[in-house]
Length: 339
Image (cartoon, rainbow, N blue to C red; front, top):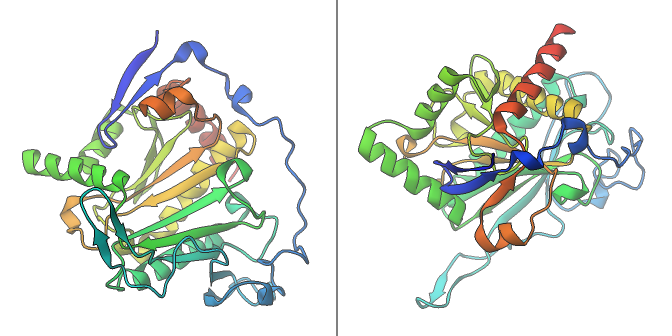
């Protein structure tokens, strides 16, 4: 029987339509995965082609003796959505407000290897990616023009990626998106009424029920939202309360790399390498630490947005989050047996 579910954090309704449910193998892509070379002489993100990219911001050194000149590399986006040399001056009126298009748009090249996704990398290389995210986040949050920093990955054509070489992106803006503002309003109202963090309480509720939890370690927990917008939509939360991703303790980076690997690997195994997006949802730079709780959202691209979703902003999820969580948890249990 279908039901409406309400996502208390995002304030969005979802229709869980289990009559339309598919088995995991039916969600899996039927498109064969392209075999990629370890290095591509035409790829601007491969080592040796540094001259083909825009200005380099920073790089990290390899630790494995591979001989590559870098392990991760950050560059200015060649086709930025915003301009860094502007001041975010606001003008207009109530009906037509505009702000100069200031922003910082960077590309984080995850690895020198052209054909290795995150799930193909050893943990220490995933840690290096997270360290690079933190390095850039902490640098840009000091810019007084910046109010919000979004770190995200588009993996695959369905997820909006135009280059095969594994990479992530960062965009820093002078404004707060409506999505984040809604979450801020919800968490602040909950704090005012209950004197506790909404997300901290949500984590404890999910752990107690243990219906949608996929995996957890000492510092992080991953679960499917009760009202997941789409099949296998997954959240990763730090157990330590911080509003800002930049406050992640360096000692917690291995745990973040660990849980990110297992969540992505379980989706990859169960759904046959789906295209996906992930987003680190951090608080605005001027948000008090008690008023929010940063997290990562991972969305496998298994379905398309259609007219009903566009017209109502109510998404139809054809599978039950509790069932999806069990399937992913079983895959992770199997993976850990062979460690």
